[in-house]
Every structure is written in C-alpha cells, then in structure tokens.
Amino acid sequence: MTLARIAILTAILSLFLAACTPQTGVAQRVRDLPGVHVAWTSDAPAGFEPLTLAQTQAAHKAGQDIWLYAPTTTLSDNSNEDSPAKWLAAQTVFHFPADQLHWIPAQTKTEPLSYLQQHQLLDALDATQRSQLWRSHGDNLRMQNDFMSAIAAYQEALKALPNDVESNAGLGAAYLGLGRASDAVPPLQRAAANGPNHYWAHRLLGTSYLNLQRYALASDELTQAYLLAPDDPSLLPAVALAQGRSGQKDLALRTLSQLEERSTDPTLLDTAKALREEFSAP
Image 1 (cartoon, rainbow, N blue to C red):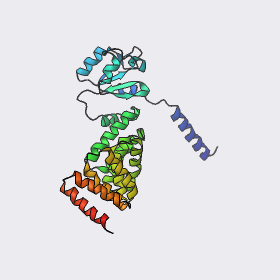
Image 2 (image 1 turned 120 degrees about the vertical axis):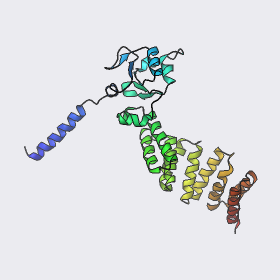
Image 3 (image 1 turned 45 degrees about the vertical axis):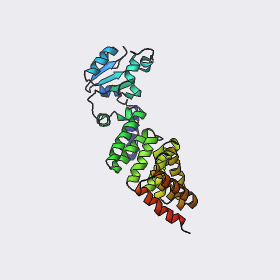
Image 4 (image 1 turned 90 degrees about the horizontal axis):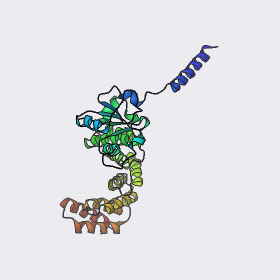
C-alpha cells in the first residue's frame, strides 16, 4: 500500500472516529461550575441532586446560581400558583433544550453572554435566547457607535433566528451608521417584510433608498413609516423629498403644506421652504 493511500485511509478513519465520539453534554460541562445543581426529578444526571421547589427557591434567594435539570413533563403542571413551572417562568432563566437544563443566574450575575461564551455553553442555548443575547449586545455596541462590532453581533443573532425583525433592523441601522446604505437594504427589507408594522424598519429602509437616490422606493417606505407614526411630523421633509425627486412634485407640495400646518420647528420649516422652492420650479 502506498504512502498516499495510507494517508487517505488514516484521514478517513480519523473522521469516522471523530463522528463516533460522543459530544460532551451541557450537564457534564456545568456540573463543575459554581452554583447549586438541582434536579426536579429522581432520575437526575450525575452531579445533580434531587431537591424540592422550596429548597431551590431558598438557594436562589441566598444568591446562588441554579443549574436545574427539569424534564418537560416536570414542568407541565401550571394548575396552581406554587407550581414549579410558574416559579421558573417568573425568573430570569436560560434554557438548554438538548439536556433539558436551565440556568437561573444569581441576582448579582453580570453579563450572561460573556459567561456562556467563556464556558462554551452559548451554542447549546435555546435559539431564541441566543439570538436575543447577541441582539442586545449589538444594540449596546451600536449605541456606542461601534458599528463594526455591532454588525458582527447582529450577524450572530441572525444565525440563530434569520428572520428576527429587531436583529435585521439593528443590522441595517449599523450599516447605515457606517454610511453603507447598499449593505443596509437587504436586512432592512427582511425586517420590513417580517414586521410590516415596524416603524423603524420602514423608516431606515426608506432612508437607505434615499441615500441611494432610489426615490420612488424611498417614497413608499417613508410614507409607510409616517402612516405608522402620524403624530410625528419630523419625517415629512424626507417623505416630501422622496416624492418630489421621484417625479411626484404635486404630492410633495401637499406633504410640505401638511408639514407647515403641523409644525412650528424652525429647522423643519426652513427645510420645507427649500424643498418647496425646488419642487415649485418649472
């Protein structure tokens, strides 16, 4: 057998063995972490101790992290106020579906995203919660004008929930923060399609089209945003600009009249005056 064939067979055997090697479950990974390891069933994984709801509540009140093994059948009873399911629903809980585990952080626990990453638990988390953690992180970064890091966070959120409206809107906003209007359009289109009543999705998408000089599309989206929040006249100059430059000058002039009737803001009125001059010209 040639060396080349031996190398190929060795590589195939390595892949086979890797596929056959059991992956370390969440229960095994968390049993050495700080906190109380609780099971609400007698059939508990190694390292988890069967405890009552009252004992679990006492440990939580004492400021302990709770690592809880609770099969779905254990949580199916919502018939009374003291049921385990109702108590669990009232806490800040992170759910690891594959191992039927829950993490109830201590009241003093800091940033969950970093903690879960540090202990290689994030990928095992429920997809909705994983997406929410990344999205919240992205929002914080975007508010600090760290747009590149925010984009990476939103992309992680969307790996878990590709059609999440808020994550798509946040990603589009971060791209706009960098002046990348063309990159902002696809996520904002997804946000608007999946959240037809989402004001910011339509407004940001309209703004992106406006920046790209796609005025007819901008007019549609900005008008939709205004219809969703008609009490705010600050959007009307952008609506009029998109209308007028897409060839709807008469409609733009009517929008400007509406703005002049509804606002006393000197900046808005100065903008309205300039646009009126542009769209009234022959």
